Image (cartoon, rainbow, N blue to C red):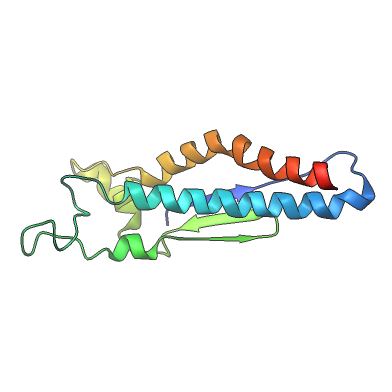
Length: 139
């Protein structure tokens, strides 16, 4: 099942009274990062002007996607952990390109989760710096 995991580990000395505020700020950062990843996947899974993910109004009859895969992509966050998954859709690994069936065909997958994870890695510092700055300035 394709998925993206986000985990944050906080180490080092913390001011006891500010530790809870910093923890909440990092939790919010994880949630924002998961939301950002969901938005990015929604963009990737709906390419234009051609492709498998065209909607009913954009493609010829019988040649459109019902959007089932995109609807099953969702993210969750709890404590300092976040997860974005396709909900276990059977053909998810094939669309991602990690299935054994990809080796037997010319279709190598869209790599949407891999590209989204790389995007999230680049954006993580920006997202977390805003939340941590909030915790430190008012803590």
